[in-house]
Image (cartoon, rainbow, N blue to C red; front, top):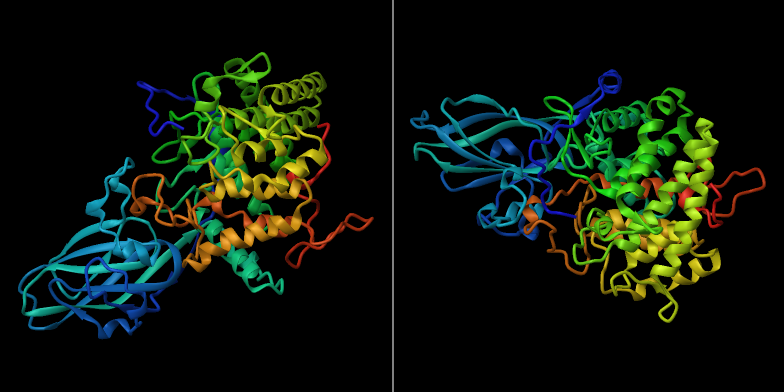
Length: 547
């Protein structure tokens, strides 16, 4: 994936009808007022002092020049902060010059943003410098923040007084209806905790669109959106928000009709000039999954041609003799690992998307298109085995690499017969030269395990991976996480990492949509939680689908 995509004089193709429908589907935002559970002070400006933190009642803590006060709001939240400020001592004879630092994790409080030299803009760092000329006063911050902690540092003031935070509150914001949720109560404490954190992650990313992260980017990305929609179907069931996002992607596209990797919605709707092959193909998948849930004929009629165009463009631009070309690997994301050859993944994801596109065509009554897609799936599968399968190593190889991601996507694409796919997934952990680095790729790894019937292994990995984030202090799931190298960041510095990220929210989907035992003859199966799903997740079915 290129670090930055810049197309000079990029002008997206906008469809007024589709964008008007998207606007009509704008959600109601729910708000709550939340106050800190207490405050504490750090002895040094940049230090980690977990053991020394003792929460105290906020009005009793006063700060002078060079001192700080950290407010703990008790859990991750997204919203707008208001501070009621006062003083002790003599009447203030100089402004209070404050630095406000918002942090999603305790470790962020110890990050010195001046040290950040990464490639993402430092303007994403949630820090403000504020002068308060009159005390007492109320300071209402205009920006929306994603945070749990707020560190207030007195940069300078007069020695005649000390600042007191009389009151602090956050007006939280989400389009998720939290009243729809109930605890999991599975009997497994860690699984219940993962489920809860998963849904809080999703809720905090549900704004006027499914944002990828409320701290950074704050926009609609296809790869994240597909996973958010799946989790939403098993929880909040805000179908209008899913439909709105589908219309936004279709309503603003590349001039040649391709789906952009992400969409801006403020001040107006505009497609970004970033294109990712796998993300465009996941639009097809997301539309078919939405129609499985809703049977929405309006969406089918309005968006079918957009989805099919993504398949047509993929073949036109990236397929030669039934094998994806070198550009396909460059334009495919898969995971934050730019040293990994992604051509096998690109081939598999195209096959995977064709399975959903064929269902779309049948749903639309476009049977000639459906038959063509069935034929192309088989041709691409055959070419995948000829081009990527290494009979000696018994795995898929791309560019001399035997990565976990290549095996996972070939299994999800049903390239191997079921028994061979099962044997491959039993030894997939052997391929550690190119490890997974995001919850996004870990999700698809779990789904591949489920697809071949390794349910216990899938649940074990879910608990180990997402559980390790909780053990590291997460109350929402993070954008990037390697338990073996927790300091890693894909951006050159953890201070810009997102610690509430959409593509990390899927454990709730997996838990609720995966039976804990074989379905009964009536098709009912108890999930890993307390409620049984309507059916297995599509990737969880072992037999190859004919479409």
